[in-house]
Amino acid sequence: MKWLSWKALDGLLRGATKGDSSQSQLDFRALLAWQVLLAAVYGLCLGFFALSARESPDARFLLGAAAKLPVLILGATLVTFPSLYVFLALFDVPLSFRQVLGGMLAANTVFATVIASLGPIVGFFSLSSQSYAFILLLNVAICGLGGFLAMRLVVKALADKPKAESAPARVNAPPLPTESTGETAASASDSISKTSPLPQPSGRVGILGVWMVLYAFVGTQLAWILRPFIGHPEAPFVWFRGKSGSFVDTVLRALGEYLGISR
Image 1: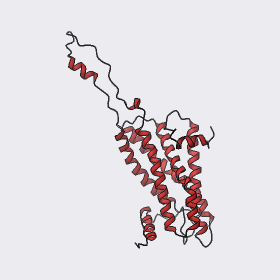
Image 2: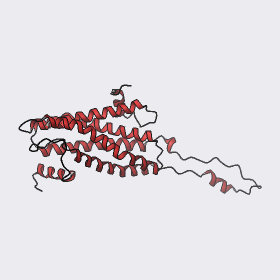
Image 3: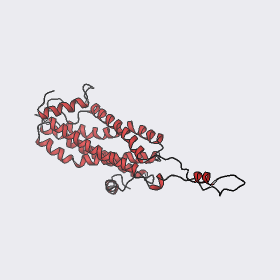
Image 4: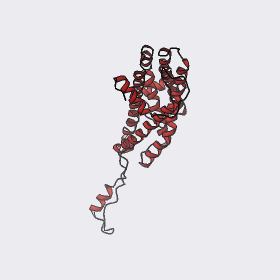
């Protein structure tokens, strides 16, 4: 299978990929290749703002965003994947290491595909708008939508496991009671009804919700470290800015500026 297999990407978007352990290594490579390529495409669309909103167009913002978007996605995966696997293992979710990794790669690929599909819209507004606040808020909204759809895939994969996997394992029926054993019919019935406890879908979704909050915090903090992606019209080009400020404060300031509310 080729690394950039359209069949693999199309099957993922149509729900054919469920993070099954039967996926080959080439499948994982295809997902990884697609998410890197599509994230870079979205980065290029973000960089268009530096070509139209500045007195002197600067293509370095375009190249920088295209290079750092894939790093953002892969970096957030490396930081949060161990916690996801451990959380699922502690709650006895019957998923192997390979299945969890496949599910996370699939989610990241969906995220990259969604934002890349909306990239032309971002590029259009980047070339036609002079408002940095508007482009910033548009980017946050698009990334939020992509993250929601990606995590929806993970939740569905955990909640919709085959029924055979979530069915309780019954103990074999004991022999009929006899006078020599002194076993009563009631105790035999109790033995038959014993089941081994297995995690419920609600528990899976709950622990996944906790992990998604952690992933969101890691993703936004890493994005803040890797900034700028868009580039303020009045700020010079740098590959990385300092640690001053915060992601939340910047978004709130941009929202206030766009709505005409000073903070």
